[in-house]
Image 1 (cartoon, rainbow, N blue to C red):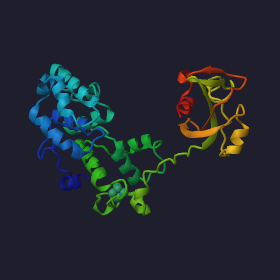
Image 2: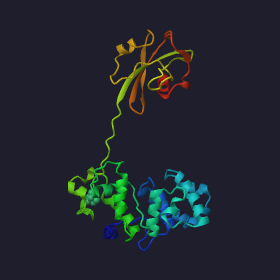
Image 3: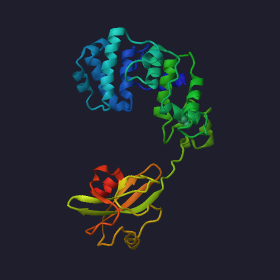
Length: 322
Ligand code: SF4
């Protein structure tokens, strides 16, 4: 793996050809790379380093200037945390261990492990989505994600040694980014092809296994909208069941089968000239609802009251608006 990295590792603006990069460089690049691609980060990284070559320079810059220079990179809390962390480091010195980096704003477990490995050669376990994918393939892990996370972390951790841990971390990152790609891994270019259990199955791209998302069932119903002088006729839902005891528009039962117009009219709270004015979609935890909205100019039914939509649960607010 390390031989492969020496030969095929990526040339990135924050890496040095020789020696270990200083932590400022590594930290800046790792913060910028959170949820952001290498291609998007590269010009920002170069500009930042030119403008603020040291952590002290960054700390001394007005925060608005730092935020301005970050504009376009997204997730702006990163820039605020960057500036705050720079000020802490300018005052108290930069940390030199994974645990120390964890104390700084904006530095999570992955980032702290990566900085400690790359800048200080600490034998940390640097695990992100790329590394999880590589491990799941190397060992053909049958447990699906996200349940497999701890198992994949342990597998990655077992491979970390005191032999160039910083390069090891970057080698894994590079393998995941350039060779062991999510959809079509280029196994012929992989230094692990002989050891890879997923490759041996003939379908490495089917790893990591993912838990099938249970399809949310759909239910159908109709709500009845009676309006007079800007007020809506409201009814209280039964205490038991979904939205129990809440104010609501009168409504049919919500069921798995679609309602025909004739069925809806039979369930209207009062006779009238009911017209379908539209439908709304609403997602509850256990089902998705398509609620047809019917409207009529009619006398209200017996039970209920005139009110406004402000106290209604969202699903009925949507229906009232429609
Ligand atoms: S052999 Fe293929 S699937 Fe296995 S680690 Fe290498 S690139 Fe990934």
